[in-house]
Length: 182
Figure 1: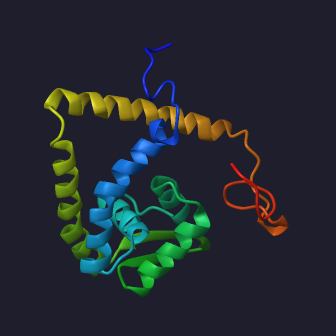
Figure 2 (figure 1 turned 180 degrees about the vertical axis):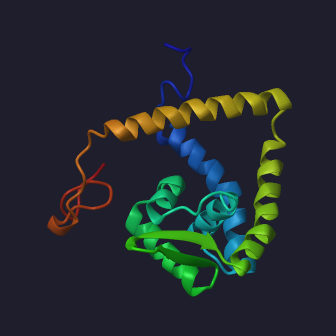
Figure 3 (figure 1 turned 60 degrees about the horizontal axis):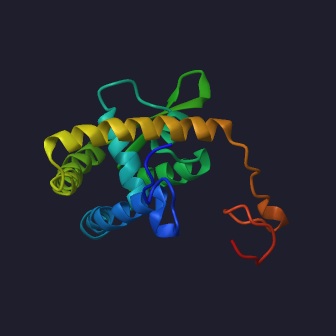
């Protein structure tokens, strides 16, 4: 067992890894969200899908399912967001001839232009945040994040927790009924 730290033996919510990562995201991510919504007229979720389509623009156009997986979103939420991007004329859908179920997604010219305008803004926020670390620490962080991403993916695959039955009054958090405490 590693040496006792706030992370390995949390005493409150403020000691939990996910809470601390959330605090970083709330601080620096909030800057990106305000830029996306206020300056560029897109939501954070729209930006995520737009950015992924932009990053994969030179390869084969992804399907909705592939994009949802890349974005760590469930398919219905990704579908709604893609529909919003299509309405804004930032994304196009192309149906494969002979298979109406296979729809590929791509940025429109306007979507690509917006991606190229927004990405440097998000890149600058990331670089400023990483400026708190020395070069060796950035390399360590990258390795650590890779390990944590792998572990989280394995945990998600194993599952083990029952899904909430929202029709029976369950919430997104898996509680049943209207009240209760965590």
